[in-house]
Amino acid sequence: MDKAPVSLVGEMSVMDRSGHKQLKWNTDRLDEVAVAKETFDRLVAKGYSGFGSKTKNEPKQLLNEFDSTMEEVVMVPKIVGG
Image (cartoon, rainbow, N blue to C red; front, side, top):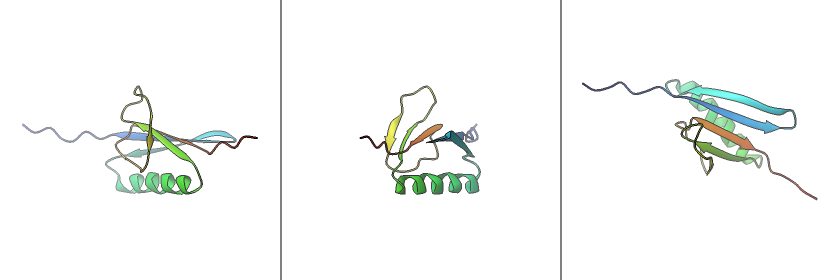
């Protein structure tokens, strides 16, 4: 008997001056996935870097593009020193 695909809820944490904001999406909801992808792409265009993992316990890896199957994504702004 085939098992139904497992629905996943992903979470994006966006670091900013106020601390952080969170965005969640359910992989079964194409509208939520689209909003998460648009947010990721917009932040990358502003200089943010995205790091993600398939599970919250795994080390995060640099993301070159949005992957809705990531359980956790952290968006970090460009750090300017001086």
